[in-house]
Amino acid sequence: MTIVDNLVRRKIDNELHSNSVTPIASLQERVDKWKELTGKEIKVYEGDLNHYDFLTLVFKNERPEAFVHFAEQRSAPYSMIDREHAVYTQQNNVLGNLNVLYAIKEFEPDCHLIKLGTMGEYGQPNIDIEEGYIEIEHKGRKDTLPFPKQPGSFYHLTKVHDTHNIMFACKIWGIRATDLNQGIVYGLNTEETKKDPALANRLDYDAVFGTALNRFLVQAAIGHDITVYGSGGQTRAFLNIQDTVRCVEIAAENPAEQGEFRVFNQFTESFSVQELAEKTKKAAEELNVEATVKSIENPRVENEDHYYNAVNTNLIDLGLEPHLLTQNVLKEILQEAMEHKDRIIVDNVLPQVTWK
Image (cartoon, rainbow, N blue to C red):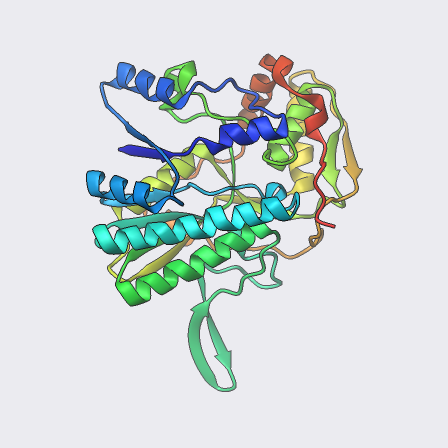
């Protein structure tokens, strides 16, 4: 197991004057603690996928069987701050992914690319969302085609570009790839991170990197209104962080065939923003914390009331046993936020980036 990281997420915290609610140790401290606890070593390369000479070195040294590619700027609001942030997101994500494809082709052609996509590639179509492909009948003829994409930000557009580049590389070079179109992740821990506080996961809460659910829970923890964008009918797919890790494991254990571009919709449940706010309010009240849900102007350009039904059978068929969003899960996150409430920067819980 090898980690390749340019540590930019920590630099972005400084840029945004933000932080994780949970204290985060340095990467080196984390891998040292893992070795101390388990006796297992995780090698670390500090560098950028956009530097091809560096990536070449990693491939030549490690000869990876699978390359799990999560190294992209992952925030829609961050990509919408201004031209500079949109350009950075496109360059970092699309070109970094293209470098990975070339590195696999040149140095390890049998390596399985496991790529983090997003359910946001699909948008909110008025039909059921299939897993990557859809059978179309048009003027008496049928074909199976990539499911139409309706991305909602410059960040989501990068994931669509990645999808097209990977699909093309599989076709012309015979690369094997799995695109994990992931829903929104929640939850604090896996069995591994529970072993020591030094292994804690991030809990982002600001309106740039924090998910709506995290933001709601942190707002409740500090006595702030739970602020829903617009009507709150926006519906998205979700999964527990334990299932995120398991899905990667399943993909690695069951690699795509040579030349196959495979798409898994990686989620377990769907909720509207309003439903999440009400769930948060209930969890807070069960902990004797008063919480109020309030609607504010939506800074995004999106459908607020829409049909949403997505298929997620592939990972279930391969053995995924979902962990669901229970009140106990919500209360665990809320209690963690309350424990570290002195770290929460109140000004960061409301949106400052607008699509308009």
